[in-house]
Image (cartoon, helix red, strand yellow):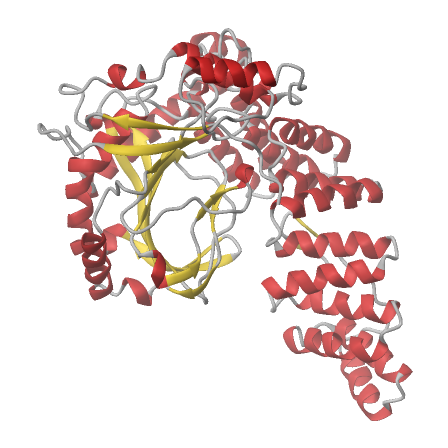
Length: 558
């Protein structure tokens, strides 16, 4: 599988302490500006140099790539300024430009941020870091991709090596301590709980429901986690005392709760702490979409710290159990206006009214005024336009999003859907395949691609896509029904009976499914079974010709 080339480096944090003992400015200066500039030149060419250690090493690597093309966009980086044209927003100027409604939204963001921070302190540790020096820890740093975090984007310098992972020999916690944490949480029944996250069920529970585990976590927020974050992200964190744990959960992955969707997190900074040793499970691990589907190595006691807006997911666990702690972090003296404007827009959109859609698009446009590279704003805006059947406008938004982040499977999925809605089926299929190369485990994507292939009478490919979708989600009745149609259309009538039957079992009130089964059984001269299926269809008032259907933005229409 193709992997986007990303910059990687290792640094040694001489001390992980509060700002009084170890200035974040000192840690930020650990990398020489000249090396950073040379890394940026390589990054713009889609290159990396893992073996480079000195300025001369990087100069040689840059010289070797001088005739290579600059990657399209790559965020629009300016190698002298080391930014991608995103400047800190002037709120007073924007209020004057956008009017009092924008000003009220900003005031509401400030108020809600203050409430969230205060609520955090009711459950989680808030305060200064330790007086003593914490043991030194190595981190491997990875680029988060083509665009900076959606909030405070002007504060971060390229090449955006902002995904921080503890080094192999330097975990944040010992294996023994992690085992004790899992045992304490299981004594609080964490393994018995489950909840829905996107298209998947996850095991686990919120940290506030696990008092013994919470006590351990709060102690380590103070002693390790907050001080570490302050050193890793000095661009936005002035010290441990401004950090607030916003949402914290212990999650359990196994073969019945195997993975998460690819997603972003609800906070400026997020962390994942691995608690289970790697020999306890197969598969699993945190992966980052722009880097491919290989998870980053992270054994028990190791942690990943990153901006919340980087797209990532939990890889499928096929055997055993994997426990992690996931946490979203707020910064008390910095309001995430772009994220909160997006949230207000989603809430307005979910009202499913014309007025709500108009309000949602205004919020998304304001987010883009604050950060023109806000990919989430573009995708959300495009989804509203698509719901209103304003397809050409929606296409423009999705294209802008995928230009900024070419390896965003959701952006390509949405673009494929809007192209198909406009009758651009060939281009839609090509776009769906591009998305599938990035995220092969998205059953909705496989299903929609199958429908598009069926429109082109490419029945064998169509059937393959439905089979992929059903391998991930075997309870998707419409995929079973469409698989039967694809097989029957390609002449495999005998083979189509099973998927038609499965569609009827999963959706017994769907008269079209019974009609499809009856028609196939009739062709096969299985008269008694055909009559029974035909009677079920007739009782449901159905007798028309079967047609495949598409899923767009989670809405099914059969």
